Image 1 (cartoon, rainbow, N blue to C red):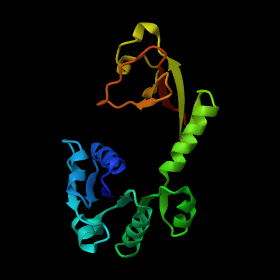
Image 2: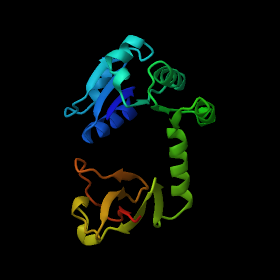
Image 3: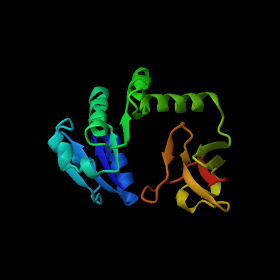
Image 4: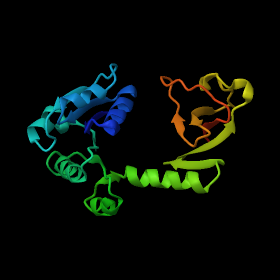
Length: 207
């Protein structure tokens, strides 16, 4: 899939890296060339310097042939404008815009745009962490359902890598919840050393 990412801040960098790791063709636009230094040395996509409101910049980044577009700059107004340009002028149907202000999310959705609000997601996650104990949680994605649960780290495994944690059949390691309430997501490239009191979060497709 050809994906255009507008904005190379922390969110754009993370998103571009994940897409690239999964084999997608990725192009990233940012007004500052310095922002591209955040990208991994292994990043194989292309980078385009320029203002995303500039039609020529969008064309140089491949907007006319992209399958999907993520507009993730810190500026809500810029994100909505660029998203509308992509849909109305270039016919990009799959556009997702980052919206920082939850109060404006519904307004932008009326334009037919898919939006993601990090502020709202973080607030919901913190509320859950404060008010609910960690128990098994099920989340549905389309026709599939994933079950998440935690197990406290055995003292014999303190100081070892989470990658060596025993798993039941069908489970994968999702992350580690630390005693101080923080959580690290597990990837093959990110080594997490277990400490006393940690809980390993496992995921398993159940449907």
